[in-house]
Length: 134
Image 1 (cartoon, helix red, strand yellow):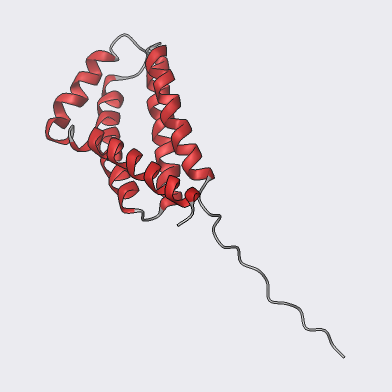
Image 2 (cartoon, rainbow, N blue to C red; image 1 turned 90 degrees about the vertical axis):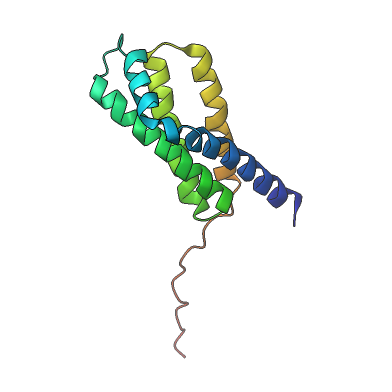
């Protein structure tokens, strides 16, 4: 295994473990977590019901994305999903004007982006060669 592939594997597993535990440890307290977000976002323009629904989606998304990162299945799609989740989280954090947390979220975003950028490119379909007539 090349150093690049080993670094990618270990980075993916570390991020997967972190994100999976974010979600899995919140699952038993999903309702309380989501309702807590309603309170946390009460001073913003975001509707409370949307915030609660987002809380459910964030926790489930973290658990699924983290477990899929650990498994290594569908890496490209999972990394894109992770980046999209980070955009949602960053949006909410910026709405709250919590700039310190937004900075931390950019580190996660960069980690996802580096993992995506270092994946081998998917194979491309090439048209069959054109036969030359004699």
